[in-house]
Image (cartoon, rainbow, N blue to C red):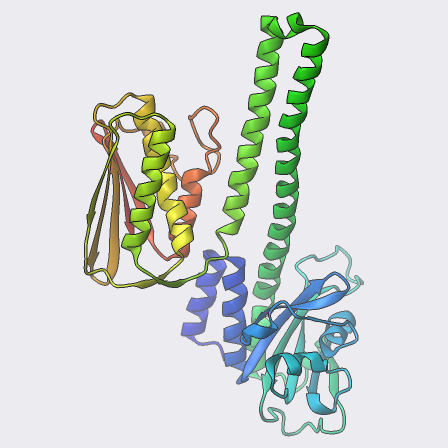
Length: 406
């Protein structure tokens, strides 16, 4: 049954985590509650069902047909308990993939988050939760000669619907929500990606248009009003493409890949990138100062995404140092290790930020920077959040400091 430990986990995944982690954690809890040995979550992918998550990594991404056990669960809204080796609907491609035999299998429909307004609505399921057992968890049910199938309402009134399985059913709406967020994010990613490509191609067509006008009448392009109109149009398209690119970055950060990582290496790479940016912006006399602690152990981090976060902080700093013509422009990086946490500081010696900007730093699309999207610092904070870290900004007329704890 659900314990305080389970409830704490459920609260955590409901309030602040990626949809992938929501599904992964929900699956882990479901398998544990049911007393299973392993499990999977399947959802629709075109004309098939796909393993969205499984504690057997090799299964993730594998598809099964709708005439499989999972397909029957989804399409007919059935709770199915079966002995897989004797069930012809068991998709043997699964066992081939994991190189082991599936024994007892409980397949539960995951109701969709979309609910129609009528009571007699057609049941719509988002997928199937499957839990595998090495032994028969229902000794009163004989499935050696065939599966036992139950309508969901029938199953809930059956003595088999014990405290363990009640708790599993309690998690189904959370699983359905995670699946819906994943699907929406995938769709939005595809749309924004296509929009970005359209905008980039629009810039090329605008260049062709200017060349065509030039070949017909050069004087048209020399008209000040027309020049302003063309410049405004090009700027709007460029900013739209940049916004789309930043949004795509924002969607990607929800799938971190944690590996053993030395955070000082990430900071050194970020410092090098900051120098390169300063050179591109022709920021003269720019310097980087590194003060890194040697005894920081390697941690499970996503180095690529952390560098993205750190560089977004530096990018704002370098651009501010350039804009305000700061004397002896400097960005300082420091790291320390204290109380089992990594402490990082990224500081510039610019003029600081006005209060109205400092109070809205991590809110999407809030920016005063011309041509900016307001997503850079939002992305940085979300990456820190995914590492269960904290970020804080202190700013004054002597400069701005970002403090990060991982």
